[in-house]
Amino acid sequence: MTSGDNWLKRLEKSENKSRSVSSGKSLRLSSIDGWTEDKLPKLLIVWNFEKTSSDAFPSITRPGKLSKKRDIEATVVSYEMFLITIEANSIVPWKGRISHQELVRLDWTEEWLEELKEVGKSLNEKYSNRPINFQLSFKNGKYLRLQYKIQNYTKLPKCPKEVSEVLSPHLDTLIGVKFKLKKDHSDKGGSNGWYDNEMAEWENQHNLKKSGILYVKRPNLDWQAYPQFSEGKQDYWSGFAIDFLISQEMPNFVDRGGHETGVDHTLDFTDHIPKVEDIMLSSKEKTGAHNFFSKLRKLIFK
Image (cartoon, rainbow, N blue to C red; front, side, top):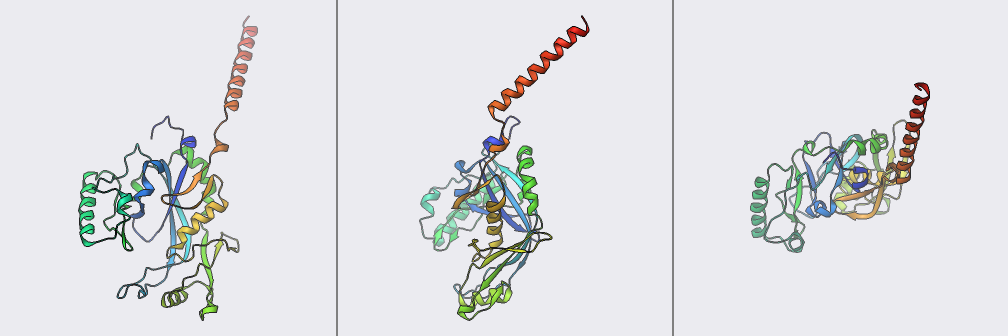
């Protein structure tokens, strides 16, 4: 980042990541498709939540394994903003014998997993000064994947001051916001009401996840329903909820109309970039004032 960069003009993409305040500083990031040069520069906003999670239940699809602990309720505690650019060299590049586009079409095998682990570990060591590096697990269902992680996200370059001055007054209003879901499984013999551990266990046993209705509570206000939210089936739905609320209510953040790897919103700073005519007018005003005082000095000291 250089002092000459106009980030209100240059920065057009943003991505949200969420984490529990009870977890460490590491973050799982998206597929490497979300960090290619065409996705940069981008603003990365890390949202810190206090979460209530479900128990881990016996997996229906993976016998002998446990399910992920699902979000039950989440409260926004704080957020942090970072700038990811090509120039900062924060990302370990992929230099394997096969491209990522080819790799994701392949079924995983033990041979592939072993090769990718060796290559990923070698690249992480070679570019050890870059905080965004390869996660050394490569399964994506039956297919292969390459995914990034960061051990300590606070080491990323900070957001430029001119950007935070525009965004922070609006994003600050989300601190203290609570998220919950209501679901109705009565048509299948389940319960109807707030999503809780008991309902999460019932969904797991019957393999019947439902999105439900998102409810949002702002400090000192009642719960407000958002029936258009459609990601309540996700295990970590609270991260989708913050994306959704930003799209609905935050100025400068434009929804991109669907899932796009590595990008959640388009940033629009149009109202904060001085127009050419405004700059010219300001220049004329300064010139006029200068001429006025010059003439005044001549009259006084004549």
